[in-house]
Length: 334
Image (cartoon, rainbow, N blue to C red; front, side, top):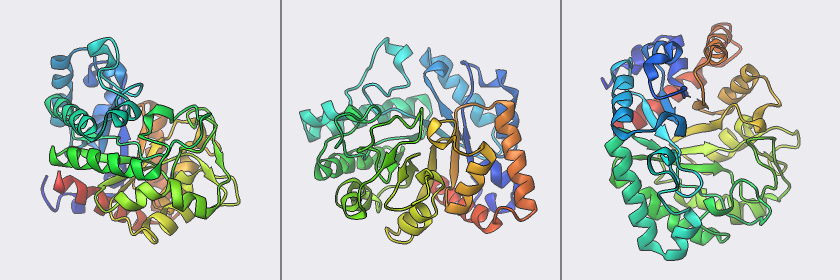
């Protein structure tokens, strides 16, 4: 990527840079919206199980995406191991251990598994993994985290999280720690609804935020949860649109210098707002990139709406430019 290319982008191209989109099926060129978005400056593509049935066909699809991109995109996937693997169709079942099972077997197993995942992603042409999960699994009734977490002990999460991050970085895969400020104490699934956490700030800092605080210096990117934390916001809003959590705490208190990415914006946890309102609030709160699992007409219309709003001053262009700086910084390093 040319070092000054992002600085030459117009406002609409900058907004496209702030999105990571998915598509249906095996052939990305069968999705005109995705191809047009890539040519308009789309920042990244996320791949799901439905996109990956054959390694060589998928490698060709990734190459098509690179060829059609105005700017080299983040090529991303959720490849945690266990029940969150996007290569299930290649093997017919989970190919890797869950984080919990890998941690039970010890440091060498966690390191080796992350090495194998890195090698597979590199072979497929990908450069970003939405892992490791840094949530602390303190709630046995949690329907969404459970064995995706390394442990119910924050120090164990830090230990294994550090191994995972360093292994991905060594292999030139961008690790994205998730789900800040911690999804481990919730009792609802944020894919369906917005969970609430009533823990005090001290409890959050001593347990759930602790892995992010300890590891944010080596993390190039962090994903924000769609969870309401009463310690930060009395009004019931998800952390993904919370200025108190993103700008106020993650940026200013923890001094995080990396990229801040939303969890999938079609999840129930953020449906309190319209897509436009959610993205507008999130940009103003400090989110740098948004994940949308599809490239349908509604998602493309959303980017157009945000463009109009930014032109009219409804969205602070300084926030958009700051996001481009963070995106550029990571893309230059990987």
